[in-house]
Structure formats: structure tokens, C-alpha cells
Length: 201
Image (cartoon, rainbow, N blue to C red; front, side, top):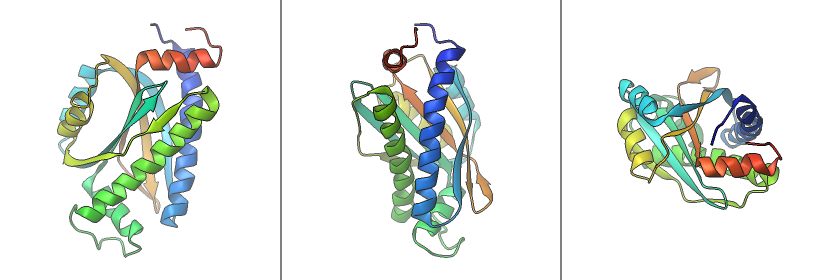
């Protein structure tokens, strides 16, 4: 299946709306200014993305969400440990800098962010693309970026050679946090989404 720039533009509109909604929900949950913004969306290959992740030597917390239904896709959100600790403090309503290690509270914090993003992307797919979709419970891991990428994608049954990569920025309290957000629909599922809008693939 060939995917051209018009197909990506259609998918970008849906993704941007769902991320904006997730951003507002996160701000409400944290009771502070939080914004996740979409920077770019494009097709990349698995080997290139793996190489990029292996070059990032930082320790990360990552949450993977699998979606099941008539459309199959995966979501992976990764944040450096420093950013995860800030999230932990905000969720616990304690001063920034209180959390100093990744623990159960940190795991819960990154898991909740994954839940919020997944829920709004799921709602957008269901309402805009007539999809039947249910997010499964998120899986949280703490490791280096390359290890997380391999374990959460390849060991989760990732079989596509190429997939959609979404670049995002994540800002909390005027502090921009590095993050990775991968939304990976199976390419046949991507075709179903586009076909539902009457866009010829």
C-alpha cells in the first residue's frame, strides 16, 4: 500500500485534535499548565527508528498501550526519568523536586498519562473514523530508550517494517520535557481509517 502526503495530512488532523484534547485533560488532572503539542508526523522504517532510539542513552519511563478492535494499533509514550519525577510530584500534589527515584508512584504517574493520551486518541478514531476500538491496560517499563523501544515494540509483536512516527513536545509549568510518542497503526488498519473517510489509497 502506498501512503502519500495527502493520507498523512488526513491522519495528522485527527491526531492533532486527539492530542490537543489529551493535553487539556492532562492539565485538568494535574491542575496546572500542561501541553502536549504535535510537531510532525511521518512514515519511518523500523531499523531507522531503532538506530535513533539506541543513540539516546538516557534512562526512560515508557508506557505502551495496545488497541484491539476492527483497527489494530499501538501507542508508545516515553519520557526521561527527570520528567517522570516532575509528573510524580504533580500527581501527588507535592513540591517539584520531592520525588527523587522511579518507584510505584512514578509508575502510576506515567501510566495515567498513557491512559489519558490513549483514551483521547481512541475516542477520536471511534468518532471520526467509525472505528471499533478498545485500549488494553497500559504496560509500563523503566529502562534505556533503545531497550524500551525494542522490548515494547518488537516483543509486543511489532511486525511492520515501516510505521507512523509522531514528534511531540511536552511542556509543564513552562518547562519543556523531551518525550517520544509513537502511534503505530498496522498499515492495513491505516487503510481502513482512510477508506472510511472516502480518501482513495
